[in-house]
Image 1 (cartoon, rainbow, N blue to C red):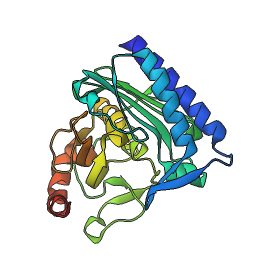
Image 2: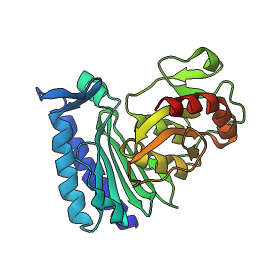
Image 3: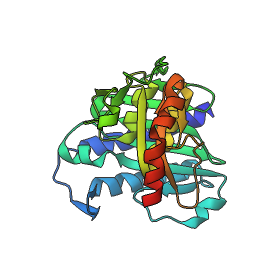
Image 4: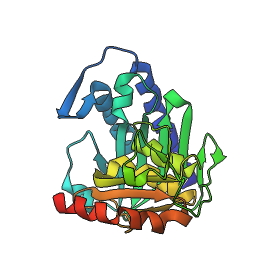
Length: 259
């Protein structure tokens, strides 16, 4: 597993170098749907990763934001779950809050993950049972037992959450989850349907750093599901997870009701 993880990190680093080389160029960009931007670099990185990772494990399935889904992946014991550029808005705006996100999922659980964030000079890696690291330094979630005062990557907070503390927020949700893993934030929560490729790699990082991880209702997250979606993600310091689930409960129930 160690040798495989090293090869995955090498391939993801190559993808990161390719993405940052094109970052300040005149590439094509458009919206897949209103408010959902994409660019030519997304597609090129996606193709590069699919080819290289496919050579590494020819039997593995494939799930990516920029590839049309194929139900054949559901029969695969192992699957690559990829977001070629997580945080596309920051990539398009010339801001550093983006990364290449790659996870290997086995029997519904991430076992290898890499976030390569070249604009931040950061490489985040995790292997199941072997810890999580940033630039080779082991990560450990912060110790916290009180929800009030918890640090949240956010641009604004609702009135009910103003007892929390905002910290700088990259556009990439994977990097926001990684902040909890690194002890730079205490809580990351979303209350909406989200895609597996956004979170698979970062979830393993958080778990290996000791964070509590669930969906918005406190339930275990699974991967390589038929719809490749989960309702929300909640990543916290372990001591505040139950309180965070309780605070989110009404909003999560209302969100599911609207979906």
